[in-house]
Length: 455
Image 1 (spheres, rainbow, N blue to C red):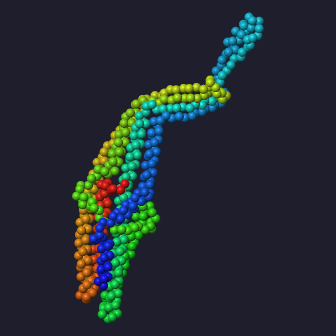
Image 2: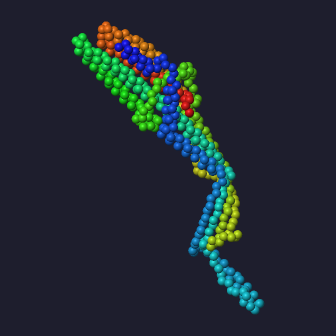
């Protein structure tokens, strides 16, 4: 019996990690899971696609600064419509008649009057136009706005990345806690089964009470129920963890003991810094974008100057020669004079947006500061609770050793033995629970201070 108890307590020490050095492999395993989640999480993939779309929009905005070239071809065939009358015969026929009389010849024939259709018939006009925006402030400000939107998308990804890291760490801690609880109840099940067999043997030999057997059987059922509950919690924790990593929900998860971080003391002693929070940077970038919009709206009266060059050919009956080919260049200046006060309204609306963003920046900064302080306080409380539960565990273990020995020797009753065993199991689970609460609280503090070292 003493040998079995030694094995039992050795297993507990292994589960709790008592007296073991920090296991760097566990950290490496968790980091690998986090990197896998960052690479495969569906929401992260969506946000990366949004960032790529923003980069393409930025390229599109930059392309407006380059010259543009396009080909345009027109062909027309018309019948009827307005005409222009040319009285060529009325003008020249008298002159030609006089010349024929003077020269006694018929060299100068009679000419009929002519009419020309205004609408072109069998006419084409093909040209290549090269245009270039010489001065357009809207293009410049639009490019700045698109660059700001790229930064917004990057900060949005960073915000979700920090949240995902915390979610993965917490989910992994919950899985480890459920696994530890399952192991603890399995060890308790071995103990109560052994006690049940001992009482059944005593009853068969006429040295025990049937009531003790019934109590041992009842305790076995209680532990069995808790064991099934722990197994179900482990399945649920594994499914949620695999969901975050975009893996099949039933995939196995590698379990390792999680050591307490080395920088817990520094995290508790230093004031939490929130200056690196991407939420604040995101609002700051939005303010910069609104300033660009405000500048763009204020410069509505700045002339827009565009220049162009046309190289083409136009003629009838598809003629193409030196007379049909042409070259034309010019520029266009556009100055808005009155647009129904639309730009004035845009300026007022942008100013209101800036006021709203300023208030949001202040409010978000205060919320983040409160969240960081709460996270540090929660970590401090979790550390205190862990220390207290470890002391309770040591006392419960020592008490169980004494009661088990007394029960074996017939000094203590079965009720005292069961009570000591329940206290020992409960304190053991509480140590594990508080241990993972410390890890979860530290993960939350890293999130609130944006101090995660994973990139």
